[in-house]
Image (cartoon, rainbow, N blue to C red; front, side):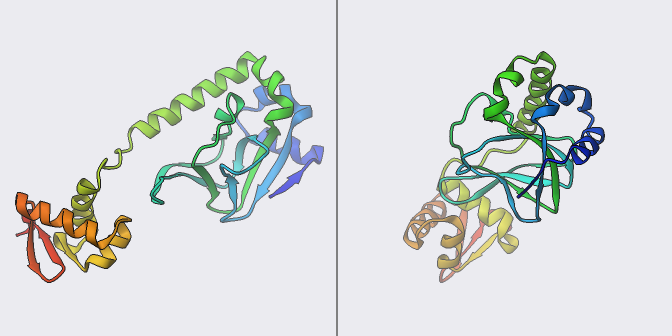
Length: 209
């Protein structure tokens, strides 16, 4: 990540964002950040928290579950905001933001600017609108299945050709469980009539019969 403090560059970025009138109130706090494709923009481990407005490029925001699986939250682009929650809380989370391509943002340090941000009504209105939009986006994403038993059926339905699971070891790896666990769950589904055993280590969803 590069930081640019040249006034002409900051002015150019200000004129490119639709939030120019609001952000001019913090002009003395502003700088420009640049990220390369694939570079992390935010991670749970970073020590300094920034509020950033995307000027050019795009990024992906995703959540890493405890089992190591990735839960995509949203894709952000020009005029989207980053770091709104950090203005109010610095709690560690499992959310990452990664640049999809070369990325330019207008930024300020939350730590050094926090009082000014919280005292500005127009800025707080901007934050509320952004958080409401993100909440609406997140709530439209289907929740991950709660149990491994349900995830096995989902995996067979969407990830296996014609609903047929072949090879316990490979499937167990993708499901982040042991082959023994997977075998036990498949036995349960077979007893329930949800799947049919078609060969050694091979099972098919009953609906594909």
